[in-house]
Image 1 (cartoon, rainbow, N blue to C red):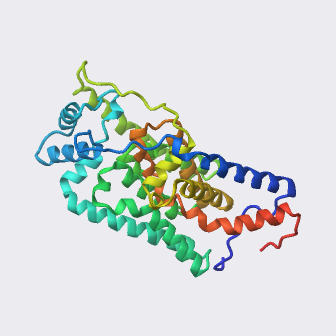
Image 2: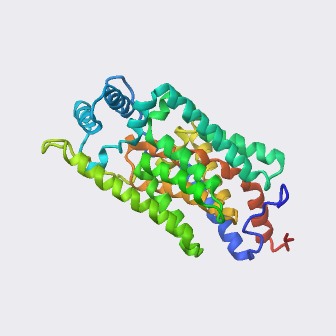
Length: 356
């Protein structure tokens, strides 16, 4: 495909559905922009005395570095910081802390930055045949805006940062004829944090729908191995839990769409924008992703939409950092909006469109 030859899925739409979608898009922007100041917002740490998840992770890494058993160290630090130990998945998988303890935080910061650079290169390769040079440069700028928060040294202590980079890399690397590089990236994300599971299941489900049996089997194998890992993790946590240990308050506050969009803004360059502008841009970006009729764009749409829904329905105000997972690709869809809107407006006006 030649540069600049990317087209939206709306070229063949009729007038009525095009008008309906335009109206829905305007309504969505008005809805998320309506009194954003009064909507739930991420709960940020306001003083050094407050418990910090980042400090918890750093203390666990320090304990493992000193030769401690991961589960004994994690249990002790959870109790010291008044964090729950029940159910078992309130304790993170040992992958992240173990690797940090072995490599050291400085090395891991360097690896995080290299992964950010590799992600940008992978998306450059993905989009280069499809966009003219100015559009490609704009896409890289938007991708960098989503990665900005991850370049801070402390951000790598969040497990979600690594999951975010690996899942975005998974989509950039995915090719139906050669899916194994994407499987490697997705499998690594799953080893770091179980929150990667919905996207891995989506990848496998899409392979099944397309009847790519070998690819579907590969994703199924990854999920099977992860299930075994989680089973062992549950057993190892159970060995250190006491009856009086705290239980999590749960993840069902249903804080809504505005909370999800605010959280995404806070972990990207959207933090520099007014809430109304950042939230509207995120809605338009999702519309842009959904407008492209291709396997990789569908997967990016599911990543951004799925984890935004997870934030809206299940996250607590203090777990806003789940928004890191869709952050790298959160604004990139804006690059596809002009073409999509042009095609929708033409369809709404009943104008014939050329096809290539």
